[in-house]
Image (cartoon, rainbow, N blue to C red):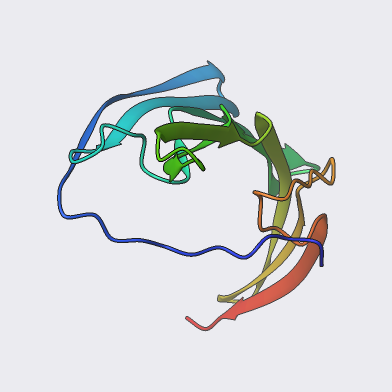
Length: 160
């Protein structure tokens, strides 16, 4: 609803250059922080323009608490993805026959998710309850194809 049509175009040759960094750090015995950063420059070799929908900078963060309450384990994770604007560049010929580069982009955005997992032991079997909230802050943009905040509840039963 209100979203523009999207079309993909193949290019004959492109160059992607980038770098990724990953780090994990144990803050406390039960608390772990993980983070990544990615840079990607993606260009069409024939025009020199950015490939459609390229995100140059992105980062993820995850903070996981593997704890116990009254000797009963659980896991609580808070994760986020932060990105620079989605870039779109294309050539357009004006009425005078002059080629012009048109650039537009989305807003920078970040998406956050919380996940709670609680296992229960039943004899030799395992029952695991999961609750997740995706897109906690209900981010939306015409370039972002996510239906908004979503909730998930699940049960998993594992036979031994």
